[in-house]
Amino acid sequence: MGSFRVIALHHVQLAMPAGAEAIARAFYGGNLGLDEVPKPASLAGRGGVWFAAGTLALHLGVDDPFYPAKKAHPALTVIDLAAAHVALPDPTPFERLPGLRRFYVADPFGNRIEIVQPD
Image (tube, rainbow, N blue to C red):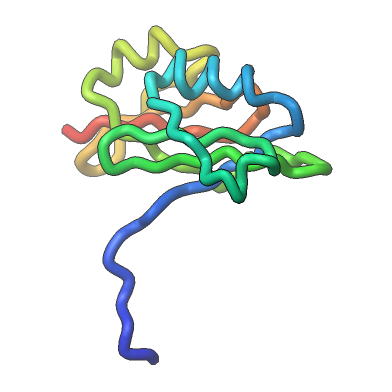
C-alpha cells in the first residue's frame, strides 16, 4: 500500500457514438440541466462533451465502436425526485434503498443513469 489516499471522485466518463454531441447536449444539458464546460484544446479534436453541476463533473467521450454501459452507471442526486421522474424519458419505477429513493433512465445512447434523492 502506497502513502497516498483517494480523497474524492474527480469525474465520471460515459461513452457516446461519434458525431452525437448535439444529442448529448440535448439530454445532459436540456433534460438533466447540467452546464456544458469547454474541453481542453488538446482534447477537443477527439469529440465528446463535458458537463458539470456543483461538484459533479461528467464527461462523454467518443468510443468507436460504441457500446453503451448497461450496468455500470453514475448516480445523480436531485432535489425533487418526483419532478425528475416526470421530466425524464422512460423512467423505471421508484425504488427505495436505506436512506434514499431512486429510479433509472437511459441516456439517448443507452447508457444507464441512476437518479437518486436522499430521504
